[in-house]
Image 1 (cartoon, rainbow, N blue to C red):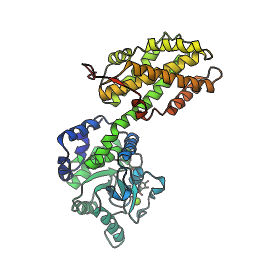
Image 2 (cartoon, rainbow, N blue to C red):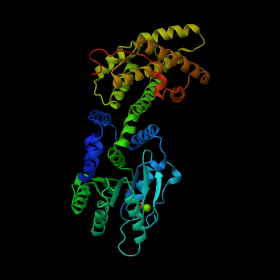
Image 3 (cartoon, protein in one colour):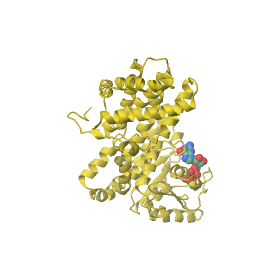
Amino acid sequence: MPEFEDILELLPDNTQEILNPLWDRLPKEEKQALKLLFEGLPLDFNLVNMLMDLSMVQMKIALARKNKVVIVGPANVGKSTLYNRFVREKTDQAEVSPVPGTTRVNQMADAGIFAIVDTPGADAVGPVGEKEKEEALSAAQEADFLVIMFDAIQGVKDTELNLYHQLLSLEKPYLIVLNKIDLVSGKHETVVIEKAAHNLGIDKNKIIPISAKRGVNISQVLMGIVIADPELLIPMAQALPQYRWNLAWRVIVTSATISGVIALAPLPLIDFIPLIANQSTMVLTIARIHNYKITVKRARELIATFGIGLLARTLFQQLSKLGGVPGWLLSSAIAASTTVAMGYAASVWFEKGERISQETFNNLTTNLTEELVGKLKQLFKSKPSQKSLKEALADSLEDTGMAAREKIDSAAQTDPPKEGQPSV
Ligand SMILES: Nc1nc2c(ncn2[C@@H]2O[C@H](COP(=O)(O)OP(=O)(O)O)[C@@H](O)[C@H]2O)c(=O)[nH]1
Ligand SMILES: [Mg+2]
């Protein structure tokens, strides 16, 4: 997992100089907090995109007022392909083709917390393509940030170098990407990057090798753009806790459905070993999402503090007394519910260092069990297959609305942090 500094390092020195005053305006503590928030962010493009969506909620501004990120470079290097990776609305997609000169005018689309601009090839030498070049340079002139793209196969020659210097003279913050890296065999990759860097007269770690077509390293580009502007960084950072819950929730749903299926076997509810193994894995994964490193032993201890075994047995006895609910259904619903409650408790623990109260834990489990029992009873007149049960549980959990964390938070209380927490 790259750290904040690793991403910052991708930006050219002169861009870092432009950015320093922006960063300096941020209070020291805020800078530190932002860095910490970003550490451990998994650089998967889909996840970063999800974070962008969440950030948009924090930053509801019109397209016209968003920062403009302009992709600029020679014809046919893959600018429109990269542009399409960033645009949110399918209808805004640009035409991509192997024919140079496909893009003739600038086009702008919403890319979430910034606006993205695609430009025609800007490498004209003669009168042909001169108009396109002017068009591209005018977009670059108005840019808040430039993504300068070159082609890994074409490399950087005089024409590219001229364009590069012309773009630098605009004194905009920028980053450099070398596209179509997928066409270079692994063992030649370093050589190709070094050569381009040498021709540009820069350090090789200032070039981000990407494949716009295959989606390689696109999140680095995205994070580079975001890190370059604290105004973009702040909504993203604000969205991070929400994002972590979104990820954790996915893990919780998966684990809870597995728990439900484990309990479907004619298992005396006394046998908690497979359930605890499943829940331990879940707790470890949630810890990872929050950038905590814990041992399996510690995860088990955390689970044990909530006395899930006893709670499950009590619930089982109480609810089976009411009658009309088959044992398999009850144990399955209870196993899934305790897993969800445990996932929530773990998430709160790693995020805030607070243990949710036993009462909250019990209420959460009881309410959810009742809800699941109701749903499963309607769906299944007899014992379902594992697959059907998994799907039904996953759907039912989505229906609870718990994917929006506020819904649980508002009902939950926490015990004040005790000594030794959360240094798990
Ligand atoms: N192999 C490979 N081809 C790419 C990549 N990005 C774009 N292309 C192809 O390169 C051609 C030109 O792409 P396009 O996005 O239209 O380039 P533009 O002229 O810079 O906008 C198309 O045939 C794309 O499919 C890439 O990362 N790898
Ligand atoms: Mg194009």
